[in-house]
Image (tube, rainbow, N blue to C red):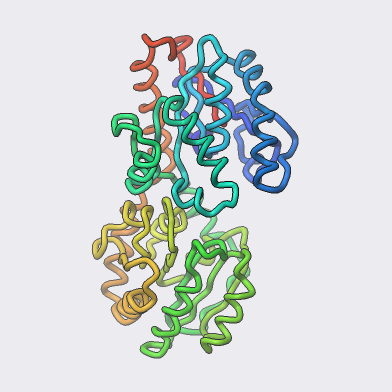
Length: 377
């Protein structure tokens, strides 16, 4: 959606192709961007979804014959596999560029049908994807190692945020409770083991005994909510920690915070981190792949080892007790967030895709005309 909104006029034409006609962001697609779907809805269940998707390949081939383009940009592994298979029978296939959003080594290990996923990924992607865009250096290294792809087929471009929109929404009225204490901590994320909210609660339990004059709000929902609620009670944090649940406007909440904490066990990028930095919040985060690319430790935020509740408690305590540190990190964080504005990241995508078109134009793939035709799957 951000690429569509910020694609420069005259640079080319962009179309969006969905596997299913679903998605919370569909209403935000600009009206002049064509949007197509191969089916109304995907089935539930991992294996059923993969088999359903593979049956869409003939439709995908017909689509690109009817709507030819120069470059196809994908974001998830399954649409990338489908495009790689479909392109084999096209006489003049477009370039296939994959923006790798996930840690494939971890994702493959988490699913019971990992054997099928791994086979599809290794069989089609190393040879069929023309170029890989990794959203962090760590994801580049892991993907390159798994697929055995040379470094010159990788470019690191981070994910982006809409800075102007964040600031606008932060000022909108919302049902944010007034502060009960002088210091407010905030964390945002799905209540899933990957986000490490249980680590955060253990860290807050340690920090509360050192400097308990603060309150913490955790925004988000997910499968671990019941367990985390029990932990809040067991750790005697009922008066300090609140599980808010999902909110449409987290920025109004972040606007009232003094410190942002990201306790993730793994994070390929870290959109919530950048959003908090954009509002000038000092951030303490675990040193995941994504956080290490965003935060310079001690300069525009604090990094602690992944899964280390004591180290996280120490960093939180330092920020609570040191207003000058909070101010310095917050100011630098706001400056750093400017690098991830959607307009700048969209321009980096455009420049890379144009370079790839020039590189591959003499190899049976590449531009069909003077303007770039981009399909996003």
